[in-house]
Amino acid sequence: DAGVTQSPTHLIKTRGQQVTLRCSPKSGHDTVSWYQQALGQGPQFIFQYYEEEERQRGNFPDRFSGHQFPNYSSELNVNALLLGDSALYLCASSSTGAPYEQYFGPGTRLTVT
Amino acid sequence: QKEVEQNSGPLSVPEGAIASLNCTYSDRVSQSFFWYRQYSGKSPELIMSIYSNGDKEDGRFTAQLNKASQYVSLLIRDSQPSDSATYLCAVNGAYNQGGKLIFGQGTELSVKP
Image 1: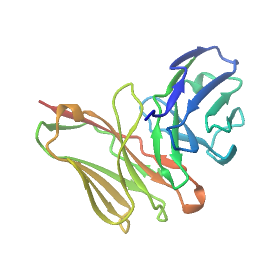
Image 2: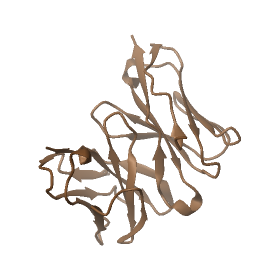
Image 3: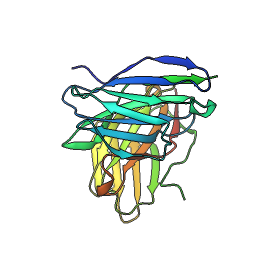
Image 4: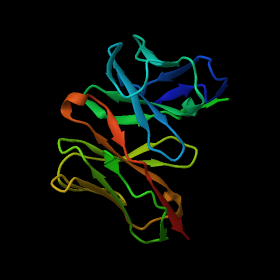
């Protein structure tokens, strides 16, 4: 049973650039949530996708956008990167019946220089 | 006031002892509560979920919930060096906040051989 997968593992970008991160949910899951985790902090909710729609959004600027595909996989896009966007980006998947039991992928470590 | 609060630690216990991790939350209508374990450089792993007042046991782990006091705890019996990690408490928001999880900053646990 494949778990949540994310790509790439690591990414280095320059300030002002754009980045796309990808996530495939655990088999049987249809909901994807994205979180940002800064060093020494707990994950912060960015947004959640269900049925290809953004269902809920956290306190992140419009530079952060996402998409969910018919196969439930998802992308996170960040435009106009800032140094403060350097963090571990986590994708979590869950099922409609248990939306709060979220299982995380290995994460993408983004460094903005 | 932070929405979910944990002592950052580090909490140090000898091998074989009971480790007690605590978490308080501010939103009285929260319904679902989770403990995640995060090893250094890795993503969070769901280890316990609890939804009603009282205790829930799973192997060496016991989660305790007291909604009146807005308090969640995790006990780890017979602690092992492999339990050394950061433990994250997560709480869902009100029922109309979808699947958003709110995390504490985590408590670092160190189990000494």
